[in-house]
Length: 254
Image 1: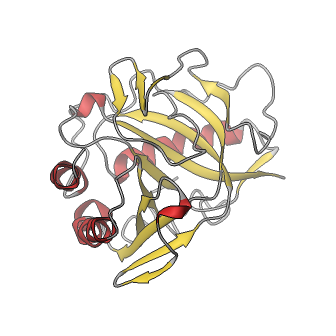
Image 2: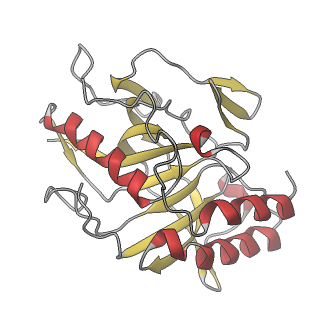
């Protein structure tokens, strides 16, 4: 996809989109029901493990794309990233380090992401770096029921946020500052993830986090180990009912 087209579609996707409830945000959503066997930490080479919700549905890879029913990811994921989690499924996922270009902002991210999109887009354009999927949103300090730094609730929704474009591989460019954009290598992370469908925004993320918390309440051997984040896989040309996203909570064993 040409960069100009990506800019057009993702700008609309990431600016001023507040969930309106018009689509089923979690069709087939997980109800927090755990798998029959207790979760165990995935090894570094094992990228994901289904532990709750929809235990059967599996995404299919088609070239660089991923398909799950009527939901499609049409841009490549970074190297080593696990497959997108189907809507309604809960997984423990291990993510390797990734090189990413990030822009930091504050306030309501649903209204403010345009300010992050364009510096990030100009950064990858100037370095001739192709877009990948997903666009990542991190929410530092978003309290999740008092447990750890990300312990659900509405707290933190007007706080800081970080928007990131992910490099497909680290050899595409160096780390460091580029104007308002900083390129960094992240640490590997293990997360509890829920796949979702529906319009993008913080309300959608909050609903996902609540379901992840319900799972954690039934699995006290795990605890929250970081701030919530969201993965947005699609642009606005995709109908709200088919938009694919994930909510994540970093976790660790107690």
